[in-house]
Structure formats: C-alpha cells, structure tokens
Length: 303
Ligand SMILES: NC(=O)c1ccc[n+]([C@@H]2O[C@H](COP(=O)([O-])OP(=O)(O)OC[C@H]3O[C@@H](n4cnc5c(N)ncnc54)[C@H](O)[C@@H]3O)[C@@H](O)[C@H]2O)c1
Image (tube, rainbow, N blue to C red; front, side):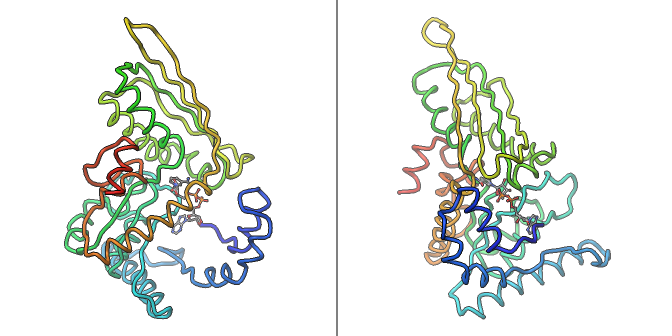
C-alpha cells in the first residue's frame, strides 16, 4: 500500500499535468482532513495467524466499526463503500482476498458497495448469501474507462453492419500504480478477462486475438491503448481498423467514481437492493444480465 500523503500525491498529479495548477493548494485543508480518515487495512505484519476464518471475521468487524465510526463522527445519513484498491490476482482457493473482506465489512456496516476493480470483492462464493440477505444495493465490476469503453461502442457497429470480425488484438502501455500492479501476469489475467468478455457479449462470438498490458512507469497516469481489428466486408473483402487511445486514467475514472457513489446512495434511499444492472454503463464486467453495448447501457441507465 502507498503511504504518500494525499496533499503530496495531489502535487504529483498537478506536476504531471493531470490536475490544474493551483488546485492542490486550494484544497489542501480538505486533503489533509481526508488523509486523517484513512485507516490501516489488514492483516498487518504481526497480526496473529490463528484459525483463518475467525481471523477474517475479526478483521471484517474492525473494518465495519471504522466505517460506522466515520458515519457517526461526521453525522452522516450513511456511507457508500467503493473499492479502488490495486487489482488482486484471482484467488486460487476459498480464502477471502482483501477486497472481499472490505466488501463483507461494507455489508456489515449497512453500506451499499461498488467494486471499481476486477478484484473479487462481493463476487466471492462465501459472500453471495450475505449480499442477498443484506438487502443492500451493489454494483461492479471494473470501471470501463478506456480500451473497453471503445470496444463496447465499436463491437455493436461491426455486428449491426454485418461486418464479420475475424480477430481483435490489443496492447496497452501504462504507468502509474495500476501499470506496476498489472505487470504481474496473474493480476493482468483478472483484468483482461473483463476486456475480452465485452467482445464476446457484443459480437456474439469470441474473435481471435489477445490483450496485453505493459508497465511503462515513465508514462505516469497516461495510458496508450492500441487495438487492431481484422474484419470481413461484402463477399469476404478483407479490411482492418486500427485505433489509438491516449487517455489519462485518473481523469477518466474520477467522475465515474463520483457518479457511482451518488447513484448507489440514491438506490439505497429508494430501497433498491441486490445487483444494480442499470449501472452496467460504467463497468467492463457488469453485475446482472443487462445489455453490453454502450448505447443500450446508457438507455438503461437513463430509464
Ligand atoms: N481508469 C482507471 O483508473 C481505472 C479503470 C478501471 C479500473 N481501475 C481499477 O482501479 C484500481 C485502482 O487503480 P489506480 O490506477 O488508482 O491504482 P493505484 O496503484 O494508483 O492505486 C491503488 C491504491 O490501492 C491501495 N491498496 C492496495 N492494496 C490495498 C489493500 N489491500 N487495502 C487498501 N488499499 C490498498 C494502494 O495503497 C494505492 O493507494 C485498480 O484495481 C484498477 O484496475 C482503474
């Protein structure tokens, strides 16, 4: 986990051209106040290795108490929990990964939950019955902000014009913390599964091709994504579309996180519960059985 104070982090972002100059100093006091609210997760070095299940349960209790304490001290009507932590490798046994402990704590504290990452979160067999019994709304997984956003627009175009896609390949160069986390092949596999699902869902078939992610720290918060799409037109005429996406990841993600926090809070107010498929517009691998083309997802969100 990162221990850089938020005001410092904001200065880095301004120096990198992500935030307007002068903004970090204008909101310095707010950032210091937010920093003071950060609590350590766990397990931490030195935590005892007792019976694993009990250990998880204790941690979840501590996290839930932190959330309730936050709500009480600030005299809030409620809180929402949004997971924006580093992507985890897919779990290879039944134990709860950190994202699932935080998700369980959200339920225990009575909070709606959003998973902006491809990590397990609520999507864990041990949590499914708890999620259902909680009566809380939840949304996820993995924010759709770049390459997959573009795929969810282009995929339906090929299908609707009956242009048969033969292969769809992609490469990403990214820096920042996400680039470093995704340099690990197991973690990248969790991420790429969501990107590939969008193609299978919008095209109705799985084209050839893979997605690769390279960590290029020098790029900082900017990401370059190339897609190469081989498709057939009338009488089998062979064609290629290539796209280059150069996006600032944090600037693309931040407004989505704000929207989601507001929308799930509203859903809770209105008494909605369970998976919010209407929020599929925001995700690579949405909960529920909503449409997968961006236009239909937007219509569903508005409805
Ligand atoms: N456009 C986007 O930025 C975008 C889009 C979709 C999904 N995501 C996902 O959002 C997540 C965050 O992306 P980022 O670029 O901000 O990454 P980042 O590396 O900059 O930030 C990750 C943060 O998670 C914290 N963290 C790691 N493990 C933790 C744990 N166990 N408990 C608490 N905190 C922990 C780190 O300290 C760090 O502050 C990633 O999973 C990424 O895949 C981002």
